[in-house]
Image (cartoon, rainbow, N blue to C red; front, side, top):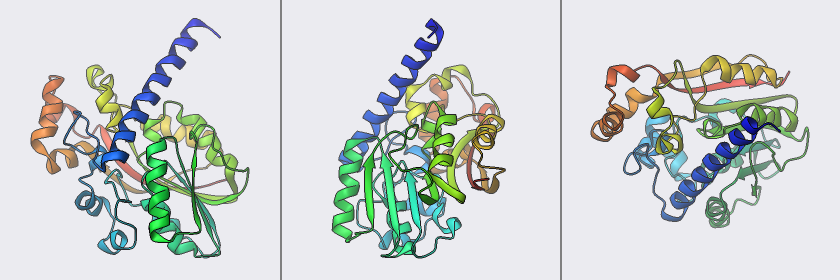
Length: 282
């Protein structure tokens, strides 16, 4: 291993540790993360109110145990999965269990939902929520998305909500998704990507990283990794300006983040995109 590769790996692991620590605190407090370290929720969320803004319905929130919705998503992928009774679903970065529980209601008692998360406190919260809600067909496993604790070709559908952007090695995540999917299996993922490089100071800000901004990949790189893993061409279901929605939801705190880096709203407008897409294993 060259010194450069070793240094990059060490840097990536430090970022993973930062993400784990931040999301562990969210799990313990039921709060939300922020690109500026406090106040402005990760991936657009003020818990229930922001979940409604990104596409969830009030009926969805009422259908899951209290505490499952932590307002950490940037989309609402589950309706687009077209789940059927008896299917097996994998939720990557399952958090408090919101999407896992919504999936469980669709696949029914004969189906199965597996949530994978690397944060012990999140897993504990999700497992408590599953017990509270009587979701016997849902289990939560500890693991990294780059090395999923899931059997090969065992899953009908994969979902994830604003999580893959947090993983430094996104290509490994897509390879793992392809591995665990059955032939013809499908994914519907909500995530953050970039339509242009971020200013360097913002890209290096760790709070921006755990706030789902600076960990994002460029669009062409992101979908190139998806195709390279054998997941075919993605069909975009949503593609909106994430920072503009952040500014609209919490203008003072969004401006605080930009001011911190000497940036204006216009300098970053359109760069950061909130997307939801569907793809099928080839």
